[in-house]
Image (cartoon, rainbow, N blue to C red):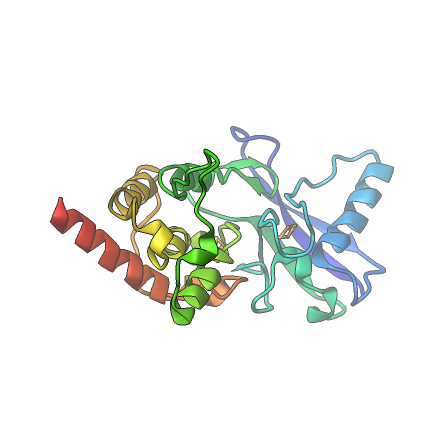
Length: 248
Ligand code: SF4
Ligand code: FES
């Protein structure tokens, strides 16, 4: 395939960025999107030009690092896949592909296609944990019965990889889907009840402090989420928050 890539180039956080056009040839349908960018970068390096910087780590849909806005969609046109799992067979010979970083005030651009998503880490630090006695008297987790439906919902919430596509997809740059997944995975389990009140209050407070927008129930986040995190988690977090704040 021959393609035309229009890529956001930005030297650093303070520099003014701009779209730059790169023609590319010899792209196979079974290459991943990131492998296609590797081909481009090899060409740029061979020509003595600065390669395009982008985030990646596992390249198998686990780590949440790869975060590209492709033709206006986070992780591109396929559903339930990350950018690293997106195959070039989803595009046609002669296509023009526009590649940008995730756009949100709370995700400032670091360079080219890399954004700073440490706001998510700070939300997680504010309450995304449980206290466990590790003194040698740890209770066997299997000794606490958990209803199967709750266990499944908790597991599904825990599959959030923190990629930020939900924020990039949202017209308000809301982080409600991410935060609600992190709240839900504990709210559904007995082990999560001890810190439940402080958890939801602190995580929502941190989310607001980071400058994410509010949720207006558009649902774009759920559609673009590579892990299929459900909007039901947002409803659960709202119930948890209402219950916590009315207690306190
Ligand atoms: S909720 Fe989905 S889109 Fe948002 S960070 Fe988690 S995995 Fe990514
Ligand atoms: S590189 Fe890890 S999810 Fe894409």
